[in-house]
Image (cartoon, rainbow, N blue to C red; front, side, top):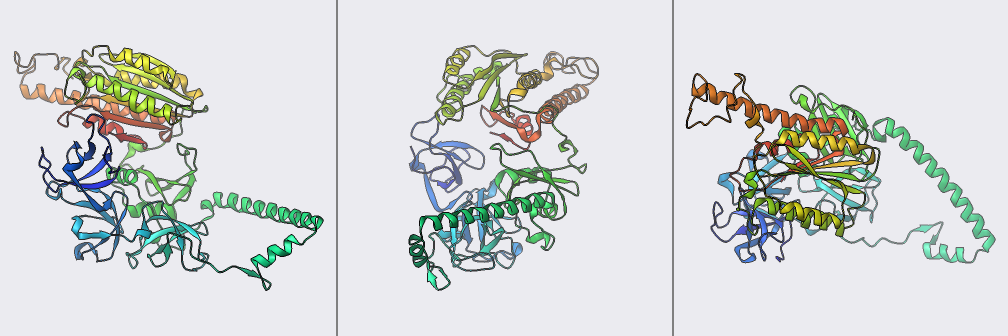
Length: 556
């Protein structure tokens, strides 16, 4: 096992495939499930299993950790000392030896490791706990805060944003204003007595006097809590009790994460649009997070924006202004009123799953089922996350067959998966009937569940078009092109246009079915994972697009 952990930035020391010496990669896992003794590293184009001797660690670079610019780059208003956060490696073909760093105001720049410096240790990474060494407004020396991201202030780009309970808007602080350990604070005094004197005085009080004092303190605490609750209730009706009207739009603190940035890029939403939504938009409760945590929904100028309860962490966003009208959100048609999760697995059982190009496995199919047993069932059961989870497994071939239905996620599920693994994949993989079957079983079990998980495992594009006829009534995918180049059309160009039209039809119907699942149960209540098995030259475009339909979708 490698000593490097997930998120570490490494440089290749070998030439292999499209990877050259000094190309940068991100460690995705300290162990490669298919190659013992190797780690899984993602480079610009490939994920490879690498030996520790085949990479060298770039010590001061790590995904989601801070760095300091060592260069001036005037075209992007970057100066030496500006603080940025590493978002990943460069995907540009000409910049494979660089990392992508986000500086203030969405300035993402590809830089070499030598163009960055290690950030002050006190900055840590997102979520690090620090202590104030200064008094400022409501913040007192010794208060504990959380590192939320880089500074959004043009005049304070050498700082990071720290959130304190007493100042939830966040304050931009440099390394001289915070520390990793609580600073020494002089003992408080009250009416001429220090705290030790007060405690000694309390110890000298009679028991009856102590009881009276304790009762009075309980009454005061109850009154304070009641007032706090009234203020919170008023605040929830009026933008969460937090006013943004006095701030410039660009000064509203916004913490972006990889998922939120990805969704904004896909939907052409600017960071400033989200800041404007927080300041001016309509605010209402959103569906809660997977752990039940409060979330807010802001709607403004054609953009819907979901945040956490602090209104500072970006969860996702989408357009409803016509530029992205497919993302218009409607109330869920079926309420998930139960508890636990229903995990619906769609596994490709087409003939191509017999291919033997997955290292360490006889077939692609065997690799899928082995990963399900090892990484899904055993890991969830071991971590105690399998409670109140049921599993349905749908085999995707010419039609959709339910092989396991609402079975509890426990060790007894493994023997059933082992039996299914021994079956020989055959024929074609049709997405549409499998997605229809998934919606059907989800609907039947919905009253018993609180959330839904859709996992689709496939090694390529769907085959649904093979059973369809084009606008001329001809099954163009069943006609041998070598024997009839025009495929019973007037020209080959017309035939190929019909084939492209059917491909597009299948794509639209698949995307609509994933969207429909979100409409029925609530877009934020369905987690989707589209998982590709096969070499990079396979066609995974539709799987990737299906993953982007719902806010909590991912392509892997």
